[in-house]
Length: 383
Image 1 (spheres, rainbow, N blue to C red):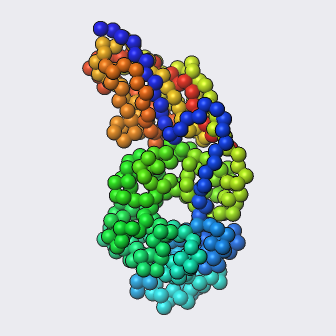
Image 2 (image 1 turned 135 degrees about the vertical axis):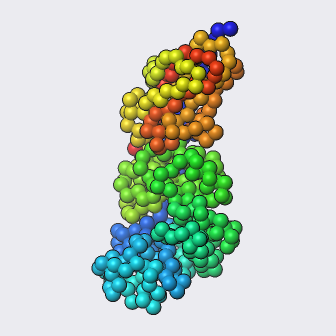
């Protein structure tokens, strides 16, 4: 029996669609990356003290020396301008050696001292565990050692231990004390990563900000995690990151970031594109197509928070299904399946940054389906 089915599908880059322009408000935390470098040199105790005094959350990196002392330093090696061990690997020094180091006049800060200071000032602290290519076993020992310092000297309610190797070290940190808060650091965020972080019981998902991730922030929150972004320095990027739902913004310029948040006037607008036919044709069984959407039909990806679709499937015998997902996503993680036997449906799916604005439409039924993919509108944020 032939039938005509109209299915409304939301390709969600965020969970909320607003049909009218409205101002956006939030309480985003600004974190001073390595203490911030606007007043004092980054990684100096003076920078951390000033950042805390100005009400910023602190961010720092922890490395273990040969005698087990943990120091605050980002790079694997000391800069050539540091004396007397310029160019040496930080983890190859003892504290007796490291205590003599001066980098542009500043001393290396011990993690214990920073933890104690943050607790006295009741300042939040994001402490990254640096592994620098260590074996998995060594990385776990390093993470556990830093976790023990936080457990003993820090405030577990305000310190976040973060790592790019979180998949390997999260359990080691949690084994020290399950109440310790842990953040996943990601260069390329993904639905899969968020799901894994949630499965491991992490608290934050912190990713490199490089564009429109409003959809991802919504998904992160839906998994019980806090969305955090790094390292955001341009005022326009800071304003947009906050408007798109980042709850923590790590910046080398925390004061400028705060001004951008206070000054920005972001509004969400709904744009009607009811007649934009993105793709039409016949799909053979198991055939998929990848129509490009963002850019061609909406303009630049920046600011886009949601897209809505009408998918019309005609000349169907009522059997089988159609899958819709982001181009590089897959069903079960960020896609949805339309069972043609159920009639009209409303479905929400997620897309990933790697999808580059494209979606994947696949016929998973046993018979041909004539399909039209129609963009009906989209929501965007303008700052």
